[in-house]
Length: 411
Image 1 (cartoon, one colour):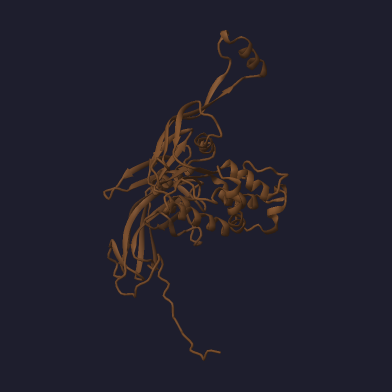
Image 2 (spheres, one colour):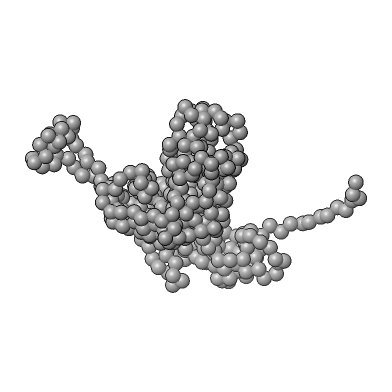
């Protein structure tokens, strides 16, 4: 079926020899047995993507993400397993892969386009569109060796997406471009998806994964560690980044079906959290623009020289709306003793659009949780915002404008 991807028991292994002599002896005397160690980069990879779906692949550096994409696209051979893809595939893997540095951008477009299955006639018709989208001007007829990395990415993406593919595979290459072109590229990706293109995206960009993908998988040490919603997987990935010796990472399913990720040493923990109305009463539903107070009670379980308490407000997709902490607000918490309890009260107008939101809390040293992570808790609190008294508006933020109109005589 066009647009489908099925990966079955996929694995990739390399041979590691102690020296060149061992390699030669194994080749000359195979009956003496192997003289190498087998290193598995990927093993037991299984997943499928239905036509029109979008899957994100997440993992720390060295987890095997790029190798997996090479096996899926056929640019590397698998040791075991199989990959089945239906329809025309366009892939953005290594930056400018297949471009010849001594040929012009235009010449490389024709070569890369033919590798994607386009005819010369089709490329003739598509070249004006490719040039317009890449926006590299006269450089289109200059050798690629004089291009910056961002220009190479612009041209490679423009060629790969000149015609809507059944399957689009994108690696981290898009992170090289400037913010304008990244925005432009993801608009094209979203448009393709709306038209039925199946997407496979590798990215560390939480916003990109959560805004585009239906599901995500987390790769860890060459295996699929977890598969789930983008929010759930990104929360687990962030917890893994903060994990240190003695830390723990766990996930718990809440009553509403969402999966909460908690990590940290446990030397300090959030004991209670509530969002209070203006009268001091805790509530789960609040009005747009109402004055609220976020109250967080923290229990200290070990002597700590310093503690930073932070929170993030996220929308229903898990994308950050706002976040801050006591470090950035220049309110340090120092010389804390086991058994103490702290209560933070953060008062602010709830200028959010109608919808469901959550609060994540972080207890750590210094300015972020990548140092000493005492506790990181996603979905610590879930609340709803409703428009109870304001005029209708779009979006996730209430930015009430004062509108003035001047009437003049047309010239």
